[in-house]
Length: 459
Image (cartoon, rainbow, N blue to C red; front, side, top):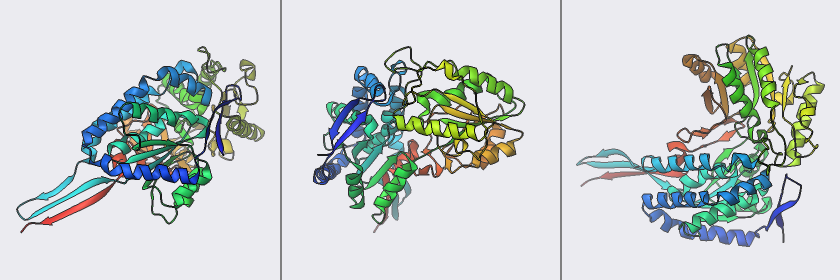
């Protein structure tokens, strides 16, 4: 029997393990979901919406279990609580717009013709969720998929092994039929076998570019719809008219919160030469105030990375950049807890350039590079000099200037004077190797349904 384990970054112990389903067992799960889907879709929309919201409310009641579990599984300090604010915000928003998003588009209703376009659920939706924000990223697809009349099968990352189990338990206890929303423990081979067999009608994967490619390869020739939310190397650009203190506070938080393990975290910053020195000085002071330590300690503000191998990647990128001429500005003496393993100190690098992987490849850790620029044109070229495109954070008081820059940016979202946030009213999407498709907003419902046209000629 194959076992899937969660190795805790807190102390390296096996925090949880579950047996992986065999291919036959996994196929039976899909068959139950498919059998349940038609009846689920026949329920009134408002009933489906309310059952999802009841599941969300029930999960909120589990806060005392969820928060320490997250600390043990992926290292986020308990002082920050769970992910309930964003989890609830996203669930409530899609619930509020579900009727609008799924309403028929009436083209004509006359004595001669009735013409309309409706939205129908795909059927069985497979959600492959990541560990960095395990509840919020999963609910992005789960809530609208269920509301739209799909059944959902959730496979969570091994690093956050208990999250899917916890979510399904909450939803079932709140009244969701068991086969409508199911959690599975699968190894990669069985997952790929199911995908290649066309077991699912839509697949949403959030994770690495390599993982996205594996999903695409497995699905090749099946014509299964895919949503792929992959890597990022999100930039910030601080213009000469920016609010300096606000920019430092927000961008440094965006670069280091959750130990830098954020899909839309800030990984590189370009600062106008007139503010550069002050920005760097204030950023170093800001980052130096972190307290690295055990995430179960309420005084800890920066926990370990989710896995020692993730921290290894960050250390290697930083070391390579320094070897190529970059300067590391954060004093290691402030962070004696850095153990060379999962516990990793934050870092700010200057004298960086785009010959370094640190400024081009995804780092996904609490380290950020800062470069001086002289113009919008230079900043635009550097921000686009990347194979990813999820979000960009622009810092200026001039909205028209930000919009002009935004039009030239190769990205899914353009922020002005904020970063590292997912607005559920706006579609969450990316370009280039960041992926394809989009979640949340009205458009997120469109990705989780298919259109059907009606053209009736009246006698």
